[in-house]
Length: 370
Image (cartoon, rainbow, N blue to C red):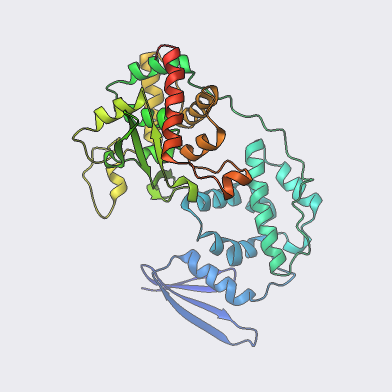
């Protein structure tokens, strides 16, 4: 059974699951239609917007512009980024500017719209989205300049105070976490300086021993990430950028414990308990948000200072700095460029350098009795 519903740009006929027919009137006044399959109603709405609006006109509102140009473009972005853009639009921009003409956007209006957002961090996120939308409007000929510039008045940002794991606390954390389900994740975060999504995606097969000058290190092959979003739940994504795909090295006291735990094991470091499935391999892993929540609860029950997954990465960087490891080597092991001309264009962070850096951290920890 079919049914017809109104759209901002014509009519949409529902034919069946994933099947629609779009109806619109062209500029010559002729009634046109197009059948679409394997799509949603929003997809048909975006199609109609493109047909009816064609080249953007001065009467185009931000609501029309979002459906015709912005939303289809952000569909190609990473899931987390796409969801964040859509949430910012629904909560902060659509209720305020959806009915306003794109060509009427000025610096004063942009500043006022962004100023309505309470949280400083969300203000900046909404500002980035509005700036992106204005850049797209410039390309469509609806704006001449981008009103979202450096003069936008953002509220002062108050950074969250991180709970760092000091070198003197490493031994206590390792002893307390021994035998815990999340122990391998914590060891990877503290020993390699991984991003949380990288550690959560690790398999035991990704870890291997590495011999250098009579010492044994643990090498991790970092080539994937596991994240969680409200729209899709847990899912895999590629590493953040090209330098992020790497072989990271850790030394003592982390390496021996990780290698001991890895003996005879396969699969995720932190399994969910569900069997492996080729259709949904992510189901094999514990969800990142579950790890974060349960680790905090576990720390509370056992009376140890709780660092969330991101704070462990900061702790690693801080400890490497105290061990006097060169920034370029720390950056290479953590999976990002050090930003210098030498680091970007010339220097390669070798396995030898990473092993020597691991030794420097091991010496520092040995001095404090770890």
